[in-house]
Amino acid sequence: MKVQQTLARLRRELAIALAIAAKDVQVYYLAPPMIMFGLLLPFFMFFSFSVRRGLAPAESVARLLAITTFFTASSAGPVILPMERRTRTFERMLVAPVALISVLAGEAAVGMVFGAGVSILTLLLATIFLGVRSVSPVALIAAVLLASAAFSALGLLFASWPTSSATPVGSIMMPATLVRWPLMFVSGVFVPLEQMSQPLRAISYLSPLTYAQDLFDHLVMGRGLQPAALNWAALVAFLVIFIAATIWFHRVQRQRGY
Amino acid sequence: MAIAAIEAEELTRVYGSLRAVDGVSFTVEPGEIFGFLGPNGAGKTTTVRMLTTILTPTDGTARIFGHDIRRDSYGARLQFGVVPEESNVYLELSAWQNLLFSARLYRIPSHDARLRAERLLQLFGLWGRHQEKVQVFSRGMRRKVAIAMSLIHEPRLLFLDEPTSGLDVQSTRAIHELIRHLNQQGTTVFLTTHRMEEAQSLCTRIAIINRGRLATVDTPTKLRRTLQQLQAVEVQIDGLTKAEEEALQALPTVVRALRRGSALRLYTPEPVETIRELLRYADENGKKIAALETLQPSLEEVFLYLTEGIEGVTVGEQAVPQAAKLGSERGGKR
Ligand SMILES: Nc1ncnc2c1ncn2[C@@H]1O[C@H](COP(=O)(O)OP(=O)(O)O)[C@@H](O)[C@H]1O
Ligand SMILES: [Mg+2]
View: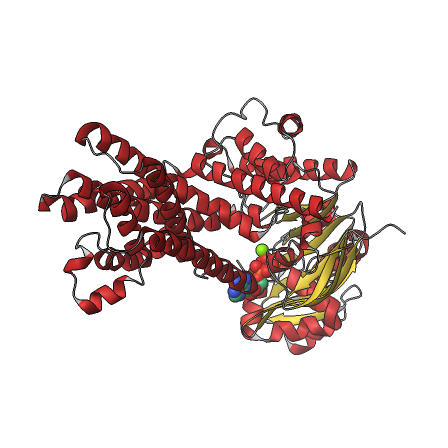
């Protein structure tokens, strides 16, 4: 009886989270900041920092995947949440009979869908035109999904910093971008880890992107610096931490007033 | 007795040093259209946000059809629909898509959702344009979509925060009709407004709130009587002596007088009669009336009158910034 109730509740929460995610995709996939930060910027960064060094195609693809999962996925939250709060549509979800975590999971799923979508498309193009073959395609897709989920949660975390409801997209996106740029420089995306100085390398292990980059190296090229299992575990851990912190921010926000 | 639709107990919300809502208690019975009337910044929206579980109260609590908003927010949320001050609809989606999304938030089976959405859109006069993006809709139409979205799960209680603010006369009338219709169908309505006429014409009972505090909860009829006490005639007569001023104050229908700049304000329950008396006085004493107008009380004055009696109104008028504010808020020249 108790179990059945819990299951029914879980089903309900999941269904509502999915409804929220589906709505977000429907509403925001063409939003100008979404295209700007989620689609154009990652490719701009790739072409200006990675490609000119004349890397092997496989290595380029691994880097591009790191950039697209990271930047595209983490751009969704800072676009969607301020817009939803400004138009007060976010309150529709807050007053729905559903837990806050499910609302946030729904919102995070969007970043994941965008991040993974752009990345998998990139991968397909690379396979067709560059002849890049991944060493384990299924694991690679799984890694893209996991990394997108973690980075989407990071974006949501940025977007959930408690503020007044009038905060425009720009004032969430600016600091979010200011944090994300240095993260990319210390994470082996532009400069490989083995070429970094010791202190910088120590810092790099604090960045979730480091683990994503290394995991993509493993799965595309078949080699990485640290064990693949460590990368998987680290990404899961970051996902959990980001979601927990996001929920905490929203608790604070609800105390202060949305 | 039936279980109350809303039972608020000492609801309080503090922002820094501001007590935005300060120990507010009231009960709304099922079937009522309950008006929450107050000027801007009175604490109406804050109260609605607490009652609808968006905002945690600093102190106190409320029950929605018996469900405590703090301990059983999930149960409470199933009982009500809420329309905030701004129409919170997705402009990029059509009215139809907006309603279906709303239905999914309440896990209404797809078949039912479509039936209800169609019925609501027809009731709201939006059927036929339901496939268009809400972006192209007027303010009034958007407000209707927002209300329809909040009704999709057929709640017993509907919160409307300033449902007609910013709308033209026609849309306002249409929304009023809708509110009455919904109420006749059995929906309890809690609405906030800063317009006395709106509360008077729609509500079965009216609570008056100002600066976070509730002044009174009463029927529109009783409040109308209060308003009558606070009507005034403002007259300007050049070269009035102190003695002549006192004579005007002593006119039979005048309750109380107040000097405002070069004008004299005479409070009276019967303004027409007072004007007649004034004209007669001017005639008999060879005085020239430079200006004359009747004034309806502002909400703030009504509030002060209710909390502090007629003296309270005088106190409020003497403070300079307050007086300026009241002057600008005075609405009706009749
Ligand atoms: N998030 C907030 N932070 C600080 N003060 C607030 C906040 N929300 C509302 N207030 C203040 O609380 C008071 C009541 O506001 P509100 O409930 O919106 O009034 P109303 O809806 O009656 O116009 C106002 O003085 C307003 O400035
Ligand atoms: Mg308000």
